[in-house]
Length: 139
Picture 1 (cartoon, rainbow, N blue to C red):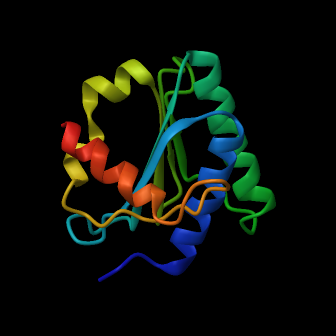
Picture 2 (cartoon, rainbow, N blue to C red):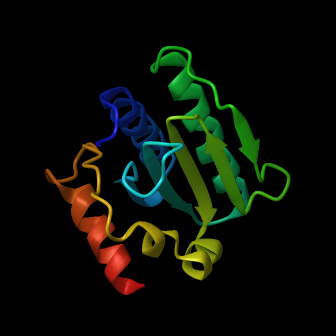
Picture 3 (spheres, helix red, strand yellow):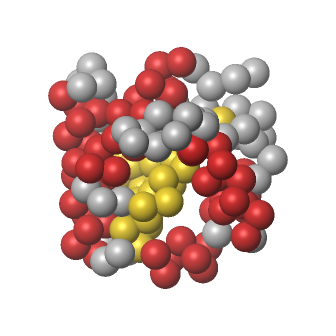
């Protein structure tokens, strides 16, 4: 089974929003194999708490305005601003402070899952898949 195209399209909108807000190391994985409750996991790094919150807010705004009024079913971590989890049901977005990203190494959980090409502006085709593979290899 593979991720729904609607989930992939939504994650691409989210990735573009994160990129615009200077989020880094943006990767997404098709997790339909090991996880039955969601299609895609996306991870983005921000350098400080304020940026974590700004990236998460921009992602929510763009998914609402450009993604057909999508809203998260739940949000976690907004008080601390170190790791914000946005659960949209079919896809989940993790906006993480760089220290949390290094410590928790979420990519290692999904290293065997196919990476999704996020088609970010200015990135070579397939860049998201290369970044995901490199991040998983570092684990």
